Length: 275
Image (cartoon, rainbow, N blue to C red):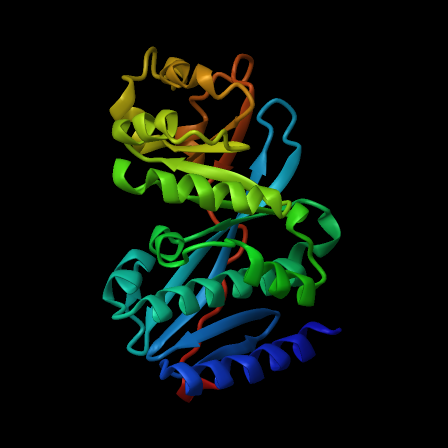
């Protein structure tokens, strides 16, 4: 199915869901070569960065990040948006909406690359859904012509009390064929990863988080702060940061991947009255 027809098909479903569940007006639109989404008074776009091997630049995937604007053009963080939502239904709906948006833009720009699509799953979404994580989105991916084997779902752990729920959720994703990933932003996240009882396929570290875990030496980023994760021998390490920060990685000794945070493209955002 052509992507524009697929967008219209999704919009029909979204409008029905919005009426049934009393959700804000929601749907997709196309702007030039890119796709955007609306949820109430907000517009959403996709930004992609490559996941590459530092030794030779081999690209294994594209990491999607969300850009959000109010109708006045003010940039809003995704965390602000999700924290403002009133119900579990809104959280789940918006999280699936944005991941579907990324899937459409990935197909538009990178379908022929045969790379992984890395998607963030909101922790509040994982907590809100009791069981069978990944089932509904698997159907959406199927409509897009993508299988779970092409998708890496990543999230951030919250606290020790919710670890059993995250363990079951990530196990459910893996059983359905998804790759799993966990974000480590600060030292306490390392403790939660070790206590989780699920060995992810990838562990994502951001450069600010790395600087809080270990002090760089000789003006280069030292990676000995990964050593505590020896219990996760299977997990591949991915470091996220600016191109300048990633230049400090010792490429000869780091057996992992890098994500330059500069976006490969940024979706042109338009408000409803600009169409």
